[in-house]
Amino acid sequence: MRADVLASTVNMSHEEWLAARKNGLGGSDVAVITGFSKYKSPVELYLEKIGEFEPKEAGEAAYFGTLLEDVVAKEFEKRSEMKVRRRNAILRHPDYPWMLANLDRVIVGKQEGFEAKTASAYLSDEWAEDKVPWSYELQCQHYMAVTGYERWWIACLVGGNKFVYKPIERDEEVIQAVIQAERKFWNEHVVKRIPPMIDGSDASSNLLNTLYPKSIPDTYVELPSDAKRLLEDFEYWQTEEKSAGERKDEAANKLKDMLGEHESGWIGERKVIWKSVASNRFDSTKFKKDHPDLYGQYVKESLSRRFSVK
Image 1 (cartoon, rainbow, N blue to C red):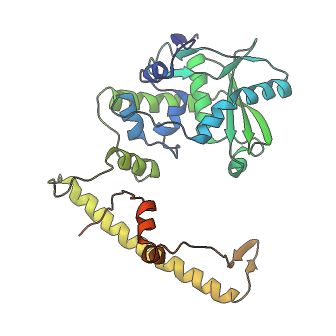
Image 2: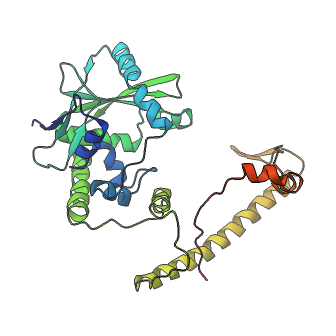
């Protein structure tokens, strides 16, 4: 099987690249569709694909990840004794036109691909031994589905000082699950202009705060009938959350009582810590009273929306 070339990326601007991505689903979209992304919700991806929401600018982690891509690729060549080259094109599956692939690189002389990553030291456990974060596993399986390749190599610079590289073998069961998930998302949501459901993830909350940053004063709307069930769910889980919080606090307080003045305690292989931590806090109330003019110059209004039920 040979992938089709949707567009060459040679001399393609970032804006043109973003526009081309709206023609289908790429490797990094798979984790979003299947619920394995911490950073983006399915409804946000849907809005991007139909052109109603512009993708957010990449943060510093993504910026440096792109900057260090060449470094990771060269180190992979050195350690693996394989050569890689860029594939300057957006590829498309010949049978599923909504499956796109913008590859980092391919292995020279082999039907194999290469993906470069960077990760924080806090995520080192996700790269231990033969492990690869599931979102990246899905991304590489997506690329193998599009290209027909049997293996994908992934290399990662972890914490800026630890380098790992591993092969990911083609898995037909995973690929079929990826194809089914993408087909449903594209045909049932993007094509039909029916958004996926909002969920309780941080990604959905962040999207709503971005879409609706301000409320219009003194306005109201009659909510649909579904709102009654959602309100009942909200109040039920609010009560459960309060009860769970009280039980958690009770357990913590009993453990603190057992520790007394000791900083830590052991129970089997688990360590319990109740440590004194010094912190300096700015007394804004006193500063406002003593220096009202200066306070006015440096105070900055922060706007957010508070949700409540009355």
